[in-house]
Length: 461
Image (cartoon, rainbow, N blue to C red):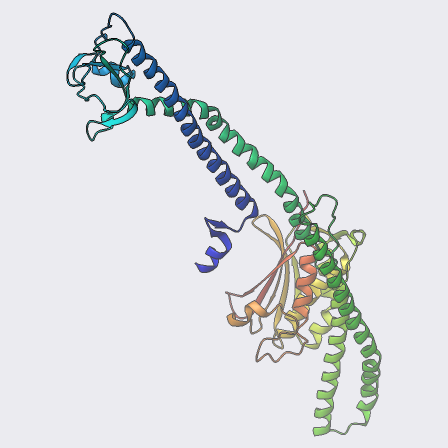
């Protein structure tokens, strides 16, 4: 669970660079939209507030300066709250008597000061009022005029105006976010191209990545990766040269030692000396086999061009492999046979020597682990419509605990009595993977032994 969480990242800290950019850009745009709406509300609030204040002043002064005195037209609460109508009050000169009002239900006394003030008649939203008290007129016993307007109406009008002004921004925001997503996706396309180039690299011959379409921001990273690839190529080349040089240098003295041992056989007395001599000869033979396999492995690790591929008939190749390994089978008194049930003819496009390496090592491995007098069968047939090659023996098989390591280089099953270098299966798998073949190992269910199944990559039409 912890590993999955780390690989995916938390939602507020995603590991994807594209997701991070999108989240930041979306947050920035949403924040800008909210700030724009708030500033619009404040600005239009002030504008509406000042405009309505000027209208209140004009209405109050028109009533205060009229001669004869005008009486306000009656209104109802709906006009005051929904349409923001002005409530006009006309008071006596001393401010104690309300002579006339456009809405008698509103009980707001005459304010002591001249000008604007805010009055709250209750606790609900509609109880706040904006009040303008006009100066007394110039005639004798002038009336006092006071104009009121509901504050909630003012806020609603300012909010409605701000929303109308912000509507284009709100409608364009999804389009802007879509454009941002397209731009970020297009910008990250170069990163995906670099990732594809890296994924397509051959581990035996890595090539430098092109900087032609790489953005300047990640060019240093790609350049550093190219330097690393150069060092890896150099290390691989050094390793191959070392293995090849060591194997070649060991080949001649080991051949001379083998020849000397063969010449010495006639001079070895019977008895315990002969037994010790046979052990020495078997050790030299294993060493020679190991040297040959090391040379083969180093050639496999070297890069090869596509021109080495050819059309190979697998049935013909298997018959040749069985024929060449018949000498080893006779020496171990193992009955080896080939059975080809694929009548359509399985064909693989790959170097014949590489394919021979796959099947020779699997058959050789089966012959070495089959008991004396045992049986090794090589079968070419189809499973679920796909051509496969099975190499079966009746040896001890592979313990389940060691099944995952048998393809490792120089690994041998603990307790194994058969000689070998531990490179045969590693060589077979390397060659198979290189040309699209897949090897599976299973202990046989119908008795003792191992089944090595090779899935062929291509079939004839």
